[in-house]
Image: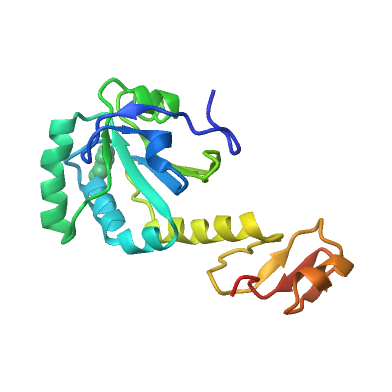
Length: 211
Ligand code: BEZ
C-alpha cells in the first residue's frame, strides 16, 4: 500500500555515493528529503541533482539532510556525479542511493507501472525528526521539480510543527500565517502577542510567530 502522511518512513540500508547508509540512523535528529529520479545520465535528472547540490546551505540552515535514489547501480551514480558537477557548476556531496534491487523503490512505492514499469517516477518524501512522513509529491519523468518549493514547504512544516498556525496559499517565510481553527479567540490573544486580524471567524491572520 502507498505510504501516507504520518506513516513511519521505511528504514533501509543501502550503498550510496557517500558510503553505505542505514537511513534512520543517517537521518539522526534531522529532517530528511528522500527523492527519486528515473535514471542516471538523463537531462532533467542532471539539472535536478545539480539544483539540489546548489541549495546545500539552504538545506543545512533548516537542518535537512537530502538523499536521492534511482534503480541505477553505484558505478553509474559515481560516473554521473562527475557529469552533474561539470555541467551544473556545482559539487554533489549528498548521497545518491543505488537501488538496483529496487528495495527502496518498492518500500516507498516509487515505481508506478502505468507510467514506467522499471524506473522510479519523481517521488519526494519529506520526513520529520520523528521519522514520520510529512509530505509526499509525485511528478512524472518529463517534469523537473521546483526545489525552492521544497524549501518553502520545509519552512511551513517546521513552523507549523511548533506553533498553532497554518500557512496560506503561496505563503513564504516571513509572511503572515493563519491561526488554526481549533484556537479560540481568547486563547489566540495569549498565543499570538503580536496580535491577529479577523477576516472571517474562521480566517484569522497573525504575523509569523517565530520572527
Ligand atoms: C530526464 O531526466 O531527462 C528524463 C528521464 C526519464 C524520462 C524522461 C526524461
